[in-house]
Image 1 (tube, rainbow, N blue to C red):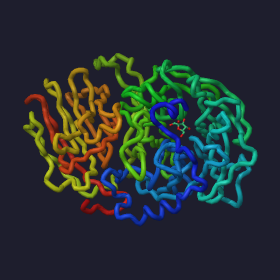
Image 2: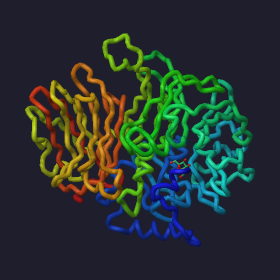
Image 3: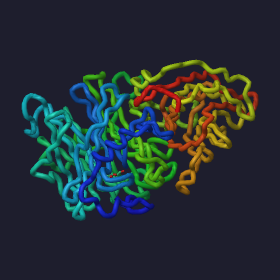
Image 4: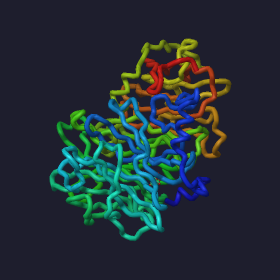
Length: 530
Ligand code: FRU
């Protein structure tokens, strides 16, 4: 956990004798601003108060989606890591629940996963409901080990397994287990990281308690850069592949990723029940700076078996974002698939592009659309022109679907969250053929010297067009490019009180077209003036 020590990430010094979390929460719940602060995400999950990092233990059970997360019950920066908890019936509206797994005896509860033990392989079942079992890293006494905790009441209360740890190789950087049931071999499979070595180790178990090593993967990918954390291994369908599936191994680096700071890479290949083999080079998960440590899961029987994930919407390098009394939020849940893409030479035949991970916001989010309309954008060149009506975006949360036609212009695009000399720009640049998010003038960029920046994702122009879907919340933007084949996720901290959308084109050959605006509801309260 090297990056946790570097940068100015400080653990709370003197741990208070008794956390007064309940008291702090009660006080906060009375405040006029409750979940409505100007920078509080209105449809991305955030904890009511205090620091949050990685999502943990995403699972669907008995009609509920569970989101656990790295949480500091004692303050608004990293420390005393414990598992926070929230549930949702529709993957959109979240209910905050009490702490699930606390730090205890100086052992922090680091990242991990959750499974529903339908076959009672662990023997943790009481009554007729299968137990939920959390497999997580215990951090303390100079090493990291894998522990179990289980719940017999749908995650409301947890018991730590008396036989912990279940996996201890006497290593200080051995963390973030992700476990899944492998049907073909009839056993549990775990991927877990030897972080410093950039090696992922696979283990198997019949009962979640006794684990034996299967194989190792790595170092690989951008191997010279920092550590590997939070691995995930899962099977995905290939779009239009008539049932063809491939496996994806995702890993996260504490620093050195494509947009700077922390970020994820993924490998596509095969898993034979024992070993993962990559069949193509590593690719970047997200081209923005703020998508880390995603956790995937499948929500059968709620769906036909789609795979979804949620990531931490922050970056370790610039993680002390200017919000209080909470810090950090999650990305929206995204469905995953693989798409075969041609190489850079678009003429056909060129296979070098391989498979890309496709991410799309889950369809459930569409229920938040309170008002939709198409926007007239023709004729806009330079300077940018406003295309929204005064007052239309009062609550500043919206979704925008648009198509950019670059023509022969150098660039074409939009500005959102505009204010006096303030905007976040999203556009397509001919050279080098990329969609970008420019947050250099997005508002408060001074809280960290590495925050201001411009982040690019290579994008294909298909029939003269690049399609974009923008999800804008009070302090974030996610840009889904060409139906999800690349994503840019960035936090922004605007002060702008004139929340208009503006469009621009470098010359008359370029156009922003087919633009639909969806004004979104808040998941916390009905929209009001703010
Ligand atoms: C990743 C990470 C994990 C660790 C957790 C600690 O962001 O460093 O490797 O388990 O955060 O909070």
